Image (cartoon, rainbow, N blue to C red):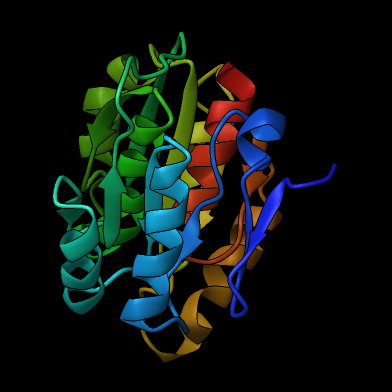
Length: 221
């Protein structure tokens, strides 16, 4: 697999990933300088590949924007996208993004924007947590019409279990770090989801909206 990555010294860009996975290497911005992110984004774009950068702040976006003027920033999702020229890929099937509370929305939007970047159609169902379960039951028929569900919740993380018991679709559960002290920065929600008695619920890491979207894409493509 010669010449399948590009060595920048501080990073080795995996240009071959789009052939293996169906989408290019994604830039995880935390821990990188704005200049490093911008350089990586430039090299990916030069290969005529779309650019997706997660966990990006405004300073990083401005650095990327200087090099890729058409790059867009989604502040709630903390994502930068620069689409390649040509036809965007489309994947059959719709993913529903279900979030418990408004405080979970950043993670939900990371999942939603990533899914849209990957060519999925997305339906959003926000603020339907178990504290007001009538909000969920009122929308459950619409939720069950989606092919895959990403369910995002903090606090005790009960929502994926409830959804999983009411639908016949795969549920990808995303615990968030939202909650008071005994939430342990998302650990309580993670353990609740991993111990779900509802069938068909799988769990990704805490705050990992990106990982949930990629899993939905992998199922649907």
